Length: 121
Length: 121
DNA sequence: GATCGTTATATCCGACAAGATATAACGTGA
DNA sequence: TCACGTTATATCTTGTCGGATATAACGATC
Image (cartoon, rainbow over all chains, first blue to last red; front, side):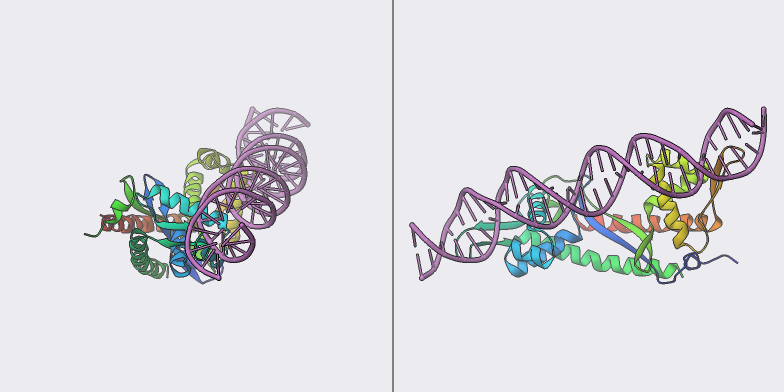
């Protein structure tokens, strides 16, 4: 009898997993990392705090946002320096749409992965 | 009117893309790289030549295979040193099954990505 | 104008990854 | 016994990425 895929691996707990992102012109544009960061910026109102919550360096967060803003037609993160509380950041309507879309997409992806995992058994 | 996602990006050519792999105990076990390598080993009968065709160093290929063989219950690549043509490698029946499975999975995944890309528009 | 916390940016440094190189072991066939 | 092409493995170097650090600019509030 033919072996099931799951019997090929030593230890059980076999699972299909993956990653999903949006590309523009073949370059990765919007993946799980940015989504989380944007969500946290929305929540905290600050790139700094958002980065800290993700345990990401400010530098990396800033570069990421800079890329996003450059690739997108209109900025996804709107920043202001100085002022009331030293400044802060907010996300644009476009960013909210992207987040919402990505979230829905992930739900469908989870289902897909679930189904694929079932097939292994 | 609400902007379509595709209008958020500067340049068109928007696309959903992703990557898929099999995990054992949370550790990545079998992704696109290994699949291609195994296929080339099957084709060429040699780790060396397979690695060259992928423009991968022999070292990396060997480490990859070593991992695979350790994670799997039975070796996926069977090697022999010395002899007729200096030695060579072949892939096991289990490896062939994994490849076949992964290929089918990728077909379904492509379809999924296609559908998701449609939704952007 | 001093203070504050943030954005914005440059520079330096260390760790890790990846490649390059070297070499041993192997077994068949000439 | 030697040559050959491959597997197997260790070691060294190099390049890249990320983190750490430093500092300027900013503008509301006091």
